[in-house]
Amino acid sequence: MPKKVDHAQRRVLIAEALLRLASTGGLEAVSLRDVAAEAGISMGAVQHYFATKEEMLAHAMDYAVQRAGERIEARLAENPEQVTTRDVLRALMLEMLATTDDSRREFLVSIAFFQRAVAAPELAAHYREFWPRLEKWITEELREAQTAGELTEEVDPAREAELIVLLPDALSQGLLLGHRTEQDAAAAIDYHLDQLFD
Amino acid sequence: MPKKVDHAQRRVLIAEALLRLASTGGLEAVSLRDVAAEAGISMGAVQHYFATKEEMLAHAMDYAVQRAGERIEARLAENPEQVTTRDVLRALMLEMLATTDDSRREFLVSIAFFQRAVAAPELAAHYREFWPRLEKWITEELREAQTAGELTEEVDPAREAELIVLLPDALSQGLLLGHRTEQDAAAAIDYHLDQLFD
DNA sequence: GGGTTTACGATGCACTCGCATGGTAAAAGC
DNA sequence: GCTTTTACCATGCGAGTGCATCGTAAACCC
Image: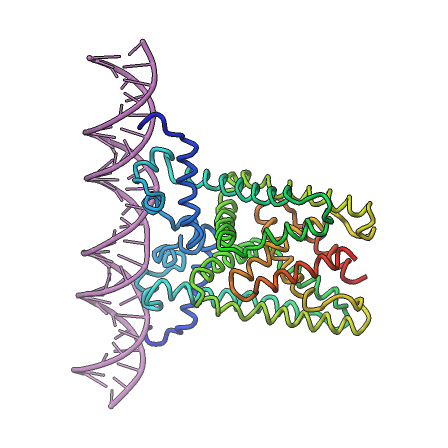
């Protein structure tokens, strides 16, 4: 069996176990032993693939960002051409909301990573990439809608793209704490889109 | 010296030391020993005022929310009557931004508490109070501005109040990560107020 | 088919953690 | 003035931590 193990796959297995655990109680709270147990392997195996806990966390961080990005981009790609920009943005924002157990977990993990990135800025680079790219994409989408006459001239596509990215994130906090319902969050999104597209 | 110590004051002393530490590395990362050292007292003293770490964290949570609330309400109270609703809201939103070292720390602490509140919903009640109250106040402010004709009829004061509370919070994340400047965040706020008050 | 490399598993080590215990000195109460 | 209560401080304990070390079995290389 040795020698033929797929390193990348093994590291993903570990990262997924870590993410499962990190969603409750933060990132530092999970121990190597916990991760190993969750992944169904020994602690020695974990050490074999990651020399240090720090390294393991960094990899999991990359993996989580990549997964979230793929999920969102997949959602963007699946829409047929005939739907309106507004529909696309609405779907995107709803996808970004922490509604399902999975996305709630992802949201909590992203917060844990956020803390870590603030404390250790050199780690932040990993996930600094994705959001600006998404924001840029939305900006372009809005610009096209604006020239097509769906938006008034006075809105600033870049600023609105900013808001569109930020709003689901901010709403998710309320969802997690339980003082906002999914319907309420969706209504807030619809209201904002109403104001944007008149 | 014994018997005449002010319990509340002592607990505040400890809470402030805890908050100073919690801003880097989360809430669970700080140990009783760390807090005691930061507060300049012995660990036994900390134990004397808080039977358990959990209790200490809960008190610090209350204290932090109270302080943040007082700070924001003080900012709201200090404005003379002659300034416009827009100016009031602008000042409020800027105050909520994590710009100074202090407010950055406060923001990080609030995130740590957020995680904790999600994991232990019974603790969330403490700081579930303040934000709805602020949101309600803003809603009223907007409603008055609307009847005074400063706002168009088609905006929903409650929804806009939601956004006004959420936006600084979301912008602060970018500030903390370093991919947004203070000027940029302020510009985003001004843009949003521009769109609201036309 | 012997030697090297890979992939672990088991164990131990130094350290830190929250918390319990026991002591002590000083003020308060009578 | 003696007792009780308050406000600590010092110490220790058991559990858990990341990490290092050692052993070992299987696969690849020649």
